[in-house]
View 1 (spheres, protein in one colour):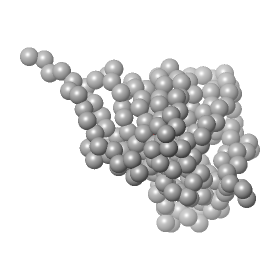
View 2: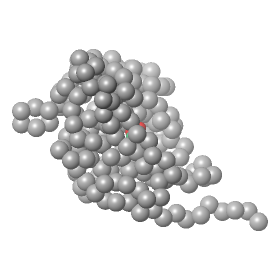
View 3: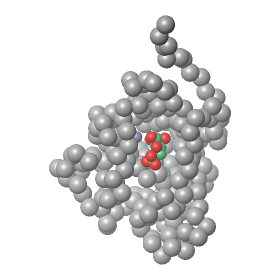
Length: 198
Ligand code: M6P
Ligand code: ZN
């Protein structure tokens, strides 16, 4: 008798993002993001305390290559210099694989960009769904004073390509201005135009 993939159920706390049945919890601290923030002096000062930037709770359907991952991400509030806490950001290895985010609590921004230089920025707040097409790198940024909590769904086959973003950065930075978040050009962005294979 063959074993079929079983239906799954998970309990998600809508304010904290904690998934009771999470099979994997990933924590990313400042030390996991070398070179991601512009203000290296502040990074240097904060590294001994190595603050938590975000957690990812993941549920998995093992053995289903055509399946979907589901998870939550919880980004802490805070800034490094003037830049808000954010995720590393990535392209998908299978570069046609899309992803969906649904914000559960908090406030933030979603930066998206393609290898050919297109840029789209979308707000994230409770009840907002963001659809990220394949080929668009994506990074989330907590611009609020509480945790930013969102639910995500993406294909098992997608995979994460961190190298391109770690090397080039995003074209835009989100910084704390006098009247709230400001989106500014990243002076250190090195576009990977035309490479398309990272
Ligand atoms: C979302 C999804 C995950 C991703 C996580 C953190 O939950 O996109 O696939 O791992 O955010 O983002 P990153 O992997 O870029 O650190
Ligand atoms: Zn993704």
